[in-house]
Amino acid sequence: MQRMTQRYKLALLALLAMTMGATAASAQSSAVRQANIDYEASGYVTPAGMEHPSLYQGGVMPVGYAMACDGCDTGCGTCGGYGPGNCGPGGCGNGDCGPFGCGGLLGGLSNGCGCGLCGGMGSHRLFCIFCQGSGCAVCESCHPLALGSCLKKLLPYTRAGLCAQRWYDLSAEAVFLGHSSGGVNEALTSRGQGPAGPIVLSAADAGSGDDLEAGIRLSGALICGVGGNIEGTYMGGNKWNGTATVTGNGDLFSLISDFGVTPPPSGFADTDAQDAQQVSIASEFHSAELNYRRRWMGPYCRFQGSWLAGLRYLRYEDGLSYTGTGAGGSFAINDQLTNGMFGVQGGLDLWWNLCPGINLGMGMKGGWLENKVGRDTRYQTFIVPIDQTFDTTEHNDSVFGEFEAKMIYRFSHSWSFRTAYYALAVDDVGFGVVDADSIFNTFQGSPASPPRSQTSSLVVQGFSFGTEYIW
Image 1 (cartoon, rainbow, N blue to C red):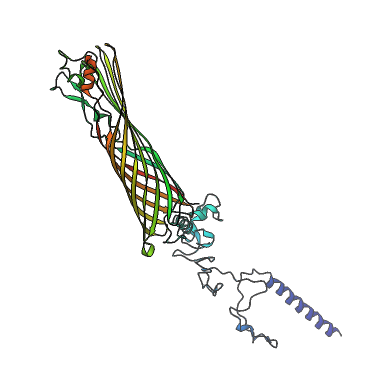
Image 2 (tube, rainbow, N blue to C red; image 1 turned 90 degrees about the vertical axis):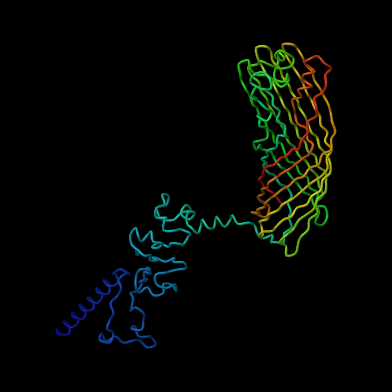
């Protein structure tokens, strides 16, 4: 009986030891890999219907163990089917090992160890001052893929296709234009008496029109039948101003007296032997048109165009002011002209559909205009009081031609970017002048005569940029 009791005690101790060993094994870290076991030597018997444990890949793992799939570890297997070292599409694994390995700072910089692509975040996110590497919108916006996605949004809108007919409902542009001086370059002031004195001031010195000045271009179109539309356009509001001044010491003489020659001995007291003289030129431009336009489409949709016919109104204002002051007196000459030109025009344009959403075009217009030139001229002196005004109107026939090179970049269904170069030439346009003969006769007390007509060609050119809108 005693021997039986001892046997039971030994069995209980052995069972207790086995239980404690199993508990210790289960408490080990799940990351510890179990050593291979000699199942045959231990007397292990495989239950019926169960494969032998030696057939399991990597040996037997404890319950609750999960394989750590680090791309730098060996024995990771396929890591979800993407292969070792590439545990996800595009390298989105635990450690897409770069040339410097996975650990430390260099590993973090080497496009790995933290998913170089997942979530749009690159390894540079480790330096993000906002999230310190955990990932945020700032990180994502700096990733090359995110930047590429932003650049992709700048591509033109292509859903309308290559064969989309040229069309817009409204357009608005800023226009920057300059213009010619009309060929007027009169010598106004000399330093010293007589024609031999050097010319120190001319009308062209004011330089009006040399600079590009801002205006607007507004246009709208309404469908009028298949391929046709009524189109209205306004362009202008550009204003130019220029001034030139010369100073002396009683040695400035005006062309009004033939530079101090007539009347003798030294010209007029109010216009000659002066200390300062000045010339100023101011001008303004407007254009309005109403057209019927008919569009056509060429084979294969690569080229398309239109022709138009309609009415055109041009308005150009030009004014010249010539003044002088001195010990003997002062004078002021003002010549203001308004050219109101109205007539008919025709034109055409051609568009090259470079690709869906990008169109390059050129257009031409020409026509005949009746030019009504209104003139308001005033001569004044102040020592010998003279104040003479002239209000005249003339009618001239003018012709004009216009060229336009333009580009359309469509960036959405409704909005497009538009830019263009313009050149407009008009014949027989009135410009302000200083008519020495008319002024001389007035100052001499002779019968007053209006100033002579001075016409020349006007060339307006510049560029624009703005937007077009489609309903």
